[in-house]
Each structure stands twice: as C-alpha cells, then as structure tokens.
Image (cartoon, rainbow, N blue to C red):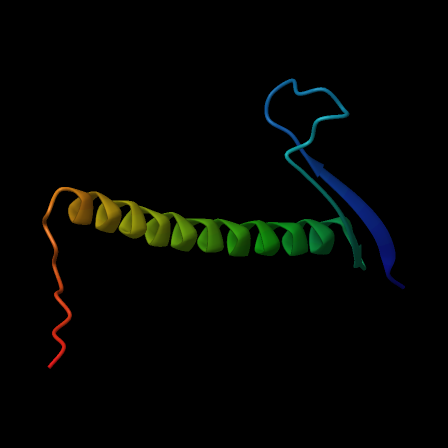
Length: 77
C-alpha cells in the first residue's frame, strides 16, 4: 500500500519554513520516496545546467556582436 510522503530538503540549519525543496510523493517506503525526490532533483539539475549553457551562449553572442566580432554573417543576394 502506498503512502504520501512529504520530503523537505534543507541546507544546514535552515529554518523549517525555508526548505530548498518540499515535495509530496506517493511511494511504498521512505526509501522509494527519497529515490523519487532524488531523481527529480537530478532532472532539475540537468535542466538548469542546460539553461545555463544556453544562457551563457546568448550572452557571449550579444557581447561579440556589440564588440563587432560577428561570427556568422547573413548574405542576401
């Protein structure tokens, strides 16, 4: 039988009202609930890393254009 588990993740002595992550999951055991939360945290981390890389590329592109270092020129004939 599954149970609803609330998993709160905090760093150090963070107050109860300030978790980094607070998730309610349905699982058979505490371990299964923790695994679900860990899997989601890993997906979130991967998504954040991808956004960071995309965002950095955009900032570099704007900086290059502003400084006159255009990498790709569009040609119209």
